[in-house]
Structures are given as structure tokens and as C-alpha cells.
Image (tube, rainbow, N blue to C red; front, side, top):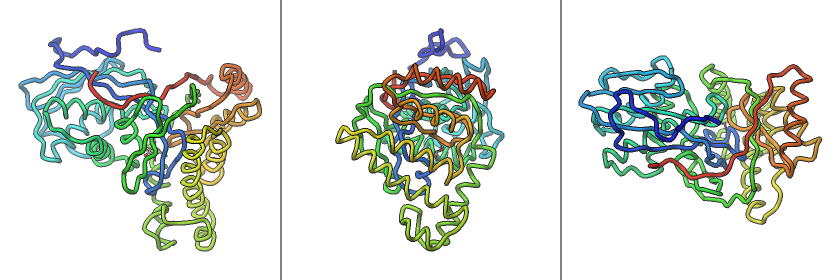
Length: 368
Ligand code: GLA
């Protein structure tokens, strides 16, 4: 944990902030690579956050300071262009750009950020920056955008300004989070149903293997899904079933489509089990195996976590997020014992030591 006061970042000019806002990161309980296939996801917002302090300025632009990076960026609004080289400031600039694109003019701004979400770990630290800035601007300008509109605006910032073709899950999750609930999001009609999450604490185990969605692999998977859609003659993989997939596709396309179709079923079954107070562990493991063998986005460190957890009595474990590194979640009666065994196995294989911490389902973005 950070040992400084992260909830009150200091502005570069030293002037007092007019307010403080925050957004959580997210963990996805289940429903991976289903969002841009217009299926179901079941994420929850976590008790790790990005905080922003904001002041108005007289310049027609923004000065952004990152406490964690100890770095400052100043930009005139008129200079913002899509697809600029991606830096830590891009997620703030993207939201400002997206507000301008929707015809909302902004006063000059000064923004300072701080965070205790490990960056690049698949916990949506970028969506959290976007959402914290978006709710701040929404309040300051009294624009009154709805939660859905804010999530979509952040999604435009990420896909059109930053230029990464992600689905809507992360932005919806960090904006709509509710304490002690996961969210069943239908990515076709964009509805959100809050599902009570009565699992005491969920462990996150970070492999510390880093992979960026900017490197083209994420976009390539998305193209493969689009190709499968065209071969099946449906409007999205949400419309497909296993018989159609097995009849019409083969090789990699069949495996990719099979993951998406089965994952949608697992999300709905998870919601059923949670409402009946039943274990969801085996569904988490099936999701992981499907991502490992069919969608092919796991890695040896993530597989090691799941293998060790399941060989030692965990209820369930799976990778989450885009994969190829990042984190796994684990549900177990005695997490510290299993984490120690995972650490030993990582050491034996010569992997970097993992980091682990518990997370609690928390509220979404808003004023502090
Ligand atoms: C990343 C993206 C999400 C989603 C997941 C995979 O986190 O940002 O939109 O596609 O990968 O489920």
C-alpha cells in the first residue's frame, strides 16, 4: 500500500482544489472477451482507486500532474488530436477531447492525479483515470450526464482518442460499481443489474507479468471474432450457439467462438448460483480453461496460479481482464496458505515473485 495521502492530490500551481473526485478500478468476476461480442460480463468495482483534484484556470487548456509519476503535462485544448502517442496523460486528455467532441465546452482546468491501483495489472487503472476525470468535469460544468452516458464518453476517450479497441466493460464497471455487489452488464442493450456478492473477500494475485493492449494482440483477437461473426452469418457472437459454431467454423475461429458462447452461459449461471447462495468456483475454473485453451490469452504464470490453487483446496480461481499477464482472482477459505504455495511454485519456476491482496466490491466513481 502507499503510505502517503492519496485522496487529496496537490495541484501543480499550489492553488486550492475546487473539489476531489475518485474512481475505483475493477475486477471481472466472470465474462471475459464477451463485452465487444455484445454478451454478458459480471465485474465489480474494487477498493483501490484513482483520486483527482481539480481547479479552474484562465488558460484555454489543461495542466495535469501525476503524483505517482512525478510528472506534469500542459496542453491547449485546440492542440488535442486523436491517436497521439500514448502516455499516462492520454486518458485525461482523451476525456477532455471526448467532452469537446460531444459539444460540451470546458473551462481551463488544472488536474492532479494519484492512485493505489497497480498500473498495467489489468485492474482498469486507465478506465479509473477516465471515470474520475469525467465525473469531475460533469459536476464542475453541471452537465448532468447519466452514468451510462459517462461510461460511453470514457469509452470514446479510450477507443477513439487513445486508440485501443476495447469493449465497454471497464468503463461501465468503474462508473456503476456498488458496494458488496457485482454488476451483470448486458453489453448488447447496455443494461446493468446489481447482483449481491456475498463472497467475504476475493484474493487478487498479480503475476507482475505486464502486457499492453496497445501491442495489437487485443485488436487481432477482436478481428478474429468479427471474422467468425461473418462466417456464421449472425449479427454478433451473442446470437451464436455451440451447434452453429461447430457446424460452420474450424480451427482457431471455432475455438474463439466457442469460448465466447460458453462464457456467456457461464456468466448467467454464475448469477443464478450467487442468488441461490451456491458455490461459483467450478465456473471460474471452466472460464479460465476456456481462456487458456480456446481463446488463448492466458500465460504460464496465470495457469500456475490456477493449478496450485485448485490442487490445494481453493473453491475457484481464474485469470481476468485481457490476460497474457496481469492478475488472477481466487476464492478460498484460507487464502494466505494458498498464496504461500503459489509463491513457492513461482520461485521454483524462476518467475518474478507475485503480489497478492484482497479486494472488496465497492462503489463506483463520484465526488469524495
Ligand atoms: C480488457 C478490455 C475489456 C475486455 C477485457 C476482456 O480489459 O478493456 O473491454 O474486453 O479486456 O474481457
